[in-house]
Length: 230
Image (cartoon, rainbow, N blue to C red; front, side, top):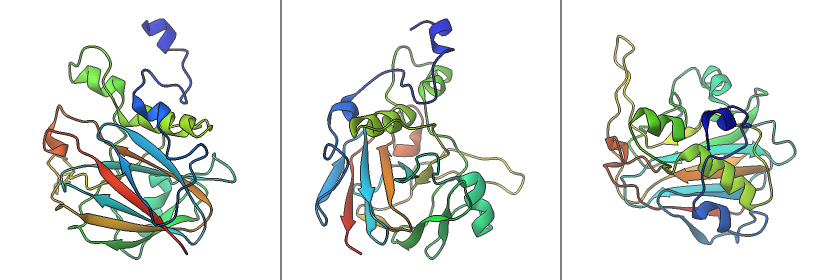
């Protein structure tokens, strides 16, 4: 695809594909409650979570960042938004007990549990093909933005845009002077977060494909999730 063609793309359009597009957990993203599902390394998956249900996202190997989004099932134009969410919790990163806010300034998820050290990120945008070009990658590279688009398309939906994700386990320390760094995750194998749906939502997770810098310890890995009853 040439740059002129790329300039006409919508925010819902992907720039390349991987197995995400053909491997939804079900045709419409409905899960079997209590079943453990895999988000393979470098791919994304979408799942419906009804109000009051919880989703447990597991850092199976302890080394993986999981870009995480939530969209209202009633209106995909309402989604978890960190421009708004940071205002709601008066901090950069959420902790257990915090509401996770939507772009309409109401809770979309509730952060119930976190067994990791609590190092997450809400500042950095999801990786995309343009990011990998800046990192001197030639050709297509799997990326979280396309994983979101394809995971939604796989269950028959079109994502309206790529919001700022909740980058679970992404280690981006902010210094006193406001400088940031990209460091490897500090989670351990089996750590999880537990999120409760405050409305009927679609949660999308991408096992971040980043293998150029060391946020995933150099090698992307699977993560797992379980939707649990209310």
